[in-house]
Length: 295
Image 1 (cartoon, helix red, strand yellow):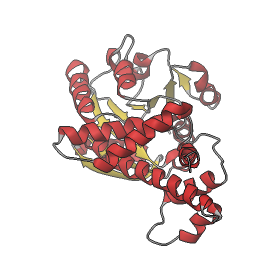
Image 2 (cartoon, rainbow, N blue to C red):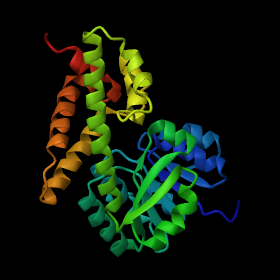
Image 3 (cartoon, rainbow, N blue to C red):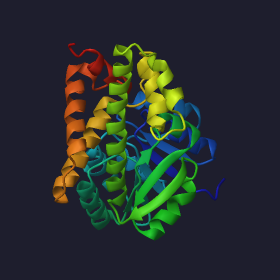
């Protein structure tokens, strides 16, 4: 146990909490921090140390992991008052599981290393809270081969697969691609469920009927039953998260000189849904937008 690297983790939310629980169960010495300190309580009871601020995360940690809401929050936690950069040292790794803008990730990584010597790996994840709880996340990483291999044994407790996608920022590009597929899928599943209901078909049979066919997918098997049965809680992920990632994908496409019309439409539909008070709700609520259409 003493041979394991020490880990620090910032962001004890829907994903961060089960990820931290898995690290503790694997025997890692863990330090945690969250903007709402009370969210750390279950981990403190399980043996983690609570940091007073993000800089304090670096005091004893070999690797500092983040799972935060968006680019602005990561920037504040890393470079704000009492931020990670104030405690960071050469030889430490920052591993960011958040979903961020790729260009911002590259800029922050360069600044962190130039100011402190701490290196950056962007390692966003896919698989939702269920994947975080079971350690079956898909992890897509950007950074140097040396840094990826150094952190691979730690991330093996969190994911079923870690793929090195390229230099810093490549993980975030891959996550944007992932979210394009997931969000467009979620929207068409909501359309399908609403159409089946309007047409007199039992929508709860859609997922089992299509299982194993070309239309099958994890989102179909998870979302379609929730939508058909109007089971919108507990919230496993949020509409605002998908919207943020879709906006990132559209921006990335523009920067690369390409066009992503399907993703652009998905972003607008997600924004329309969120404007009705659904931003903090589970994406299974998307079916309500199609149910409420005027006939």
